[in-house]
Length: 301
Image: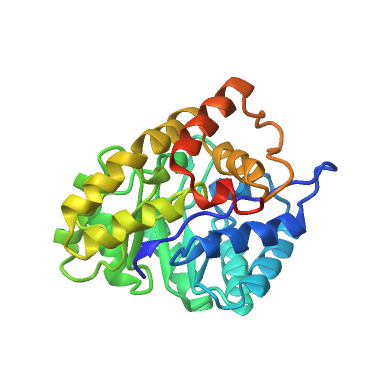
C-alpha cells in the first residue's frame, strides 16, 4: 500500500449517538476525494470514546458501505492481547485489508517489555491474517527503538508496515528503512501530514492524515513518488498553513468542522470530556480552508 490513507471521523447525532447516515456520507466524501484507502476506528475516529458495541456497529457499517471501493484499515489496539486478537478476527471477517495497532499500553506507567510486545503482535498476526501496520506515536508513551521495530518486522513478517509520527519522524523513517534492509514495507507518516515533504525525502511511501483535505495532499504524494519533487514541494507549500492550523489549533475537531460547513454531516460534536472547538478557532480554520477549497468544504452542497 502506498498513497493517502486518511482517518475517518465518527459523527455524532444530537442525541449523542453515532450518526450512522452521517458516517456513510463521511465515507462517500472520502472516496470521492480519490483516497487510496481509509482507516477506521483510529484515534482521530475518537476510538477511545466508543463502546465495544459501537465499535462493532461501525466496523460492520463501514466495511459494508465501502464495499471494496478502496482498502480499509481497521484499528484494533488494546492493552489486552486477548481483546486485540478478538478485534483483529472481527476486522478480518468484516473484510479489512489491513490492521493497525499501537503497542500495548495502559495509563502512564503500564507497559509491556519488548519480548511481550513481540508475542502480542505475533498472536494477533497468527489469529487474524491481514498485514499489520504498527502505529508509533507519542500517545502510547512507549519508546520504540528502530532496532526493536526491525526485530518485530523480521520475527513477525505480517508487521512490516509502520506509521511513524514522533518527533524527528524523517530521521526515524530513514534509519528504519536503512536498518530494515528490505524487511520494511509501506513506511508512512501521520500527524496530519505536517512533516510530509521531509518524510517523503526520508523514504515514506504514503501518509495517514485526517479526512479534512486528502484530495489536496494526494497530488503531493503522487508528484513526489512520480519523481516530480519540485511540483510536490510547491503543492505542499500551498496547503501547509491549513495543515499547521489543523495540527496545532484543532486536532481531530478540524475535519468535522469542515465537513459540517460542506454539508457532509450535520454536527461537528465531539464526545465529552473532549470540548467543542472555540468559535474563533473554527472561524480561522474555515477561512484558511476557503482559500484552498477542499472537496469536503462543498461536497454536500
